[in-house]
Image (cartoon, rainbow, N blue to C red; front, side):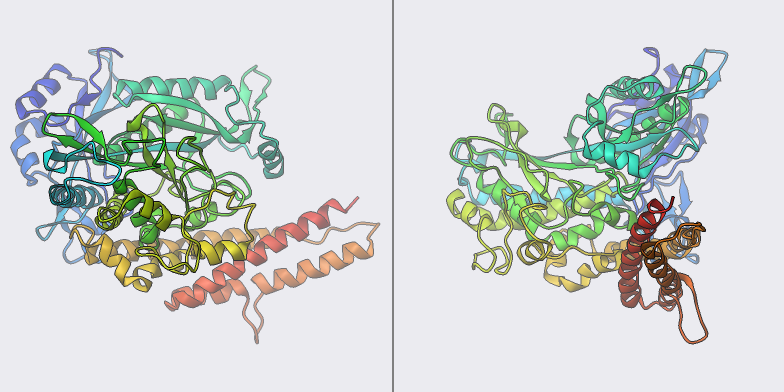
Length: 628
């Protein structure tokens, strides 16, 4: 393995790139990695000889075109105007993806594919997720530099002379949670739920194939230079069983892997290679990996907490975390830090569509599973003692001994969230708050962020509160949470409607020009198409099967409780799935509304369907358990 090349460093000269591939004949293919608006990455097999011969054309974007109507560029690349050019991006690392099932016997090495991040250009405009983030960061950097020069002294950050700031760096990181299981094995949801409640799994020792695969992932990702910090078991899962051959079988566990932060664009690219490596190594060990946000209802979902930071570089070459205050025992943050978190919270309604764009993602964000359901932050009970509140949307992370650790953790994203678009929207929203905050002291900003609902402030909305050091799930009722921090969207349609419901907030995230209306419209159209298709083709058929399986149990000993329960179950089954001449079932009404484009009605019917299905499952479980 030490002889293999894993990374071609960012900003390598063409001559160096050609030298790398010449010295490593095992790298036989090139794949341009463009990211569409759903976060999908393109992957092709271009022979290395073509890349070497036409390298100038690859840099210019004229070597490869793709059919843009086949990826999620809804309303941009259409069937009659589908050509999309793919210029490569030399400013980030290029990774080599090795196929360990395909060896070049002549040199005894696995065949590799050089994956090169690329942009997607349609009609002369960059229309991909990577470009949205890259261009947004360039805009925010320019605005931040202008702001520093206009405000040389900023509250809480007096040690940095704004006139000396020459560069802004955006530091980000994600982490990956995933479920791993033995193919075709099904585990008991009830048994796993009990294990989760009793906290039997978190940071438990891994065994067998899971341990081997996890260790393999950590070692392999380090070869890519990602500086893995740890891999461990998460809250969900069951202990595996030993089969007749002595191997661990019936695996169903939840795993997390964390790695080091990087600049925002590179951090989003890193996430792609991590998912690829994890999937391949676990598969090689006979295990399936699931990155879905909520693969099993009733159990912990998969999060991908996204960390957000900013730093300034001064003329003397020093790096300064501009969220961290000069006096960490007196202030939680600098004025810039306060502004950034307030900008994110105030404008979160138009960030949330990018964070949670699928049915699956919203299924995860339910009370009781440490997943955020409302727009609120936590700073800690006092500046002297940092704390960590796991029930809020975006929290402040601090280390009193290390100012560079000061950052925000956005807890709502999941492994399939489009990190590129989320970071673009977040940094744009942060800029809005920072512009406000540089005019105020940290004392004024702390008071503003800590205001009560109904209290008039100078930036945040009057009717809302934005900070809580309480347990948001346990210390408030559902009604109080919605009143203080806003009601969360229940469906993908509701979430996408926020682009229309909050035009002034949409103007904030589009102000840089990269996350423009065309991109938002395309993203929303793609999300709604997937929402509609998944409901009609997957969710409703799965629910229909559950209804069919909820059958009457014949028994010689039936009590009045059994009869009562079955009567309620039968009424629910009919309401959900059985049409008559005069009345359509809930499933049929939902399908009709979706097909007719009445998405508002469909959204309400989806919520009702989920409620009735949960009621049916609970009733039938009680009905079954009472049978002897």
